[in-house]
Image (cartoon, rainbow, N blue to C red; front, side, top):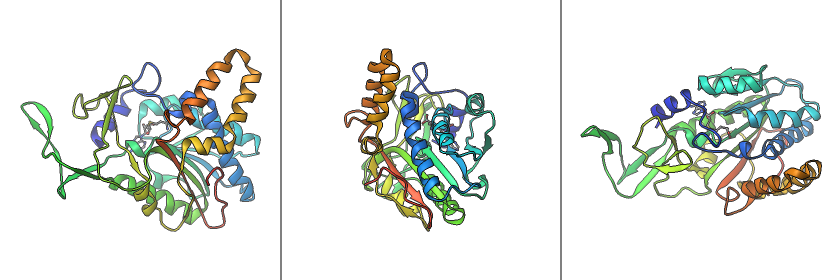
Length: 300
Ligand code: SAH
């Protein structure tokens, strides 16, 4: 999964109608604006520390950062922008929108400063392991095709995700700040096979076309919470409830009144982001904050 995704992201921009999948920030500017408002609010209530930085993990095209930073600038935030991204192709996309950003290969390389961090659909792309009867199943080549070594009832874990979460928490605990982790997944650890492949907006077989389709798995938010030591966590909230509590409906109204010709499009986007049948309940949000930093807004 790691090898496939490293190649996959390094060799293309997978986002949008002509790519393989679409993400919340690509659906509407309202998503990044809500994230920016939450980060700006936490920073303001923390006393506007001048050394705080904006950080994002797996920023895709840089759309979320662009929308969030526009809102944060209105609150007076002028900190530097730090992007953790391994794909040269996507770094190029990000540079076209965020020419002054600084890029890093790993979370550990972020400057030792208070973080205003967001990761949207980053953790789902990190590799998982699958176990059948307590034994890890691996992949072998049989007759020129990839095949799993064993089948049966599956239990998953993700040491890579646990390590990423622990690293974010360690940074926030040591240097201050808040982090928003947004992804699709489940609130409680549970058995089940959640590995999936997407190509051209369709589900595909996970072992077909290695490196040519997007591989992700549901984020286990209970495991994630266990990995975050030394920090406070908000409650886990669905994306729909979080955006609604933050006032996305008001933002949609104000955008629609400024652009009446786009009113239908804006309403469709709000519905896609929030409705329980769309992204609203499968996608979830959890906030991390340091001692002495306020809990980010929008959580129950
Ligand atoms: N956050 C964006 C893009 C999500 S796609 C959005 O919401 O639109 C996943 C992103 O994570 C891509 O930018 C991909 O290149 C990056 N990524 C995947 N694995 C990574 C890793 N191990 N380290 C850093 N970035 C990674």
